[in-house]
Image 1 (cartoon, rainbow over the protein chains, first blue to last red):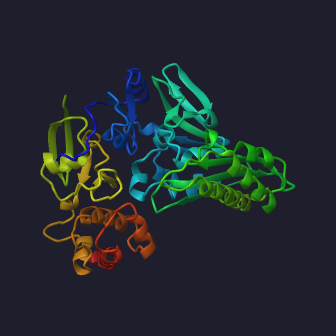
Image 2: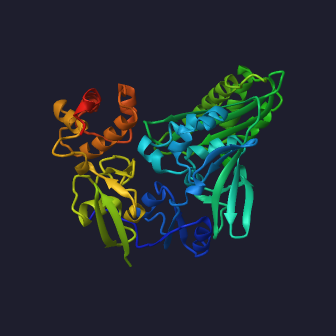
Image 3: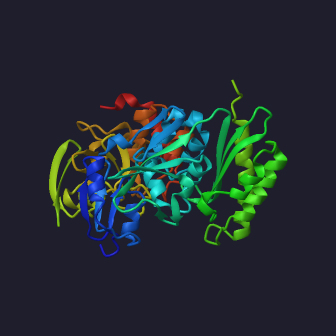
Length: 292
Length: 158
């Protein structure tokens, strides 16, 4: 058993309500345990060494996906498989189904949670770019109440978010607007692997087929806040056509900061960003439903 | 420090005092002696450790035993009913779905889950379902055939 990987000693608490979880989270070195599919492997490798785990898997009140007025609300404990199975999410934001089809594998998707993905803040994680592209808002709950943080301001850096001690991510809210189309394009080495690079686009067109709003998210290429801000700025108000999509792709490729690793050299990753950004924009534009 | 963990495995309740860090796969194999589930890559990639927690398959090397407290676990030992193999087990026999057998318990549990949701999956659906599991012997071809065999013989299910 010498090579067996086990986590360090840790205390375990099972939260019975959100309030109970929040009171447990006031202790330092405490981590929320949801799906555990990032945290447990990190604990085995000693990349995470919490002293206390707060298991929130019993908090089913956080496991919802629902349309509420002009917002799509996704509870932090909704699983990847729930999002992939949600027809309302797929209809309003096909980018979410594009991405969920290529997050890990079907078994992992049954357990990994949306909230866990965001709070893990892994630079290669797919949903961060999706929610950044969609300009979602994170609802962070503390004992004093909720605070709303745009997903684009949620990350402080790799594996680090604005969720503080005594707080937890409760849900993500995504604005729903007429005339919106969206798509996610990912290239990975094999099924279930992390992205070499990926791009997500959310577009809203006006009556003249010009781009009224656009969000572009980038995965695994060192984009600040997972966003291609200069490419977005370029597209605003322009025609939704091939030429502009290609130019936006080139701008996105220039503004991100991919690093050389076992998944590829920098120029290859920039090439992917240009191509995948253009593809995501094209597919998003094709998915815009005509105004009623 | 230990905590009391009570889990119903294949219909039988087991209670053990374990460390919170104990993984479900080791609870099953070392605490209650059900060694059918295999402990493989330890990184949730290979799927040899797949069991069901309640109605869903899970890679049991990535779940703490504590997380299964109060829940029902089904392992490969629970597939056979009344002395009759589950069709997925029979399919692996009929179609030579294993060579070394290391990945088999996880493959069987995922196959059973797939067929419960989709009784007549095509090859692409089968390959998608087992895409989080690794077999180093068969090249997957015979595993796909075995699961197709099980889909064609549902009447054998107890």
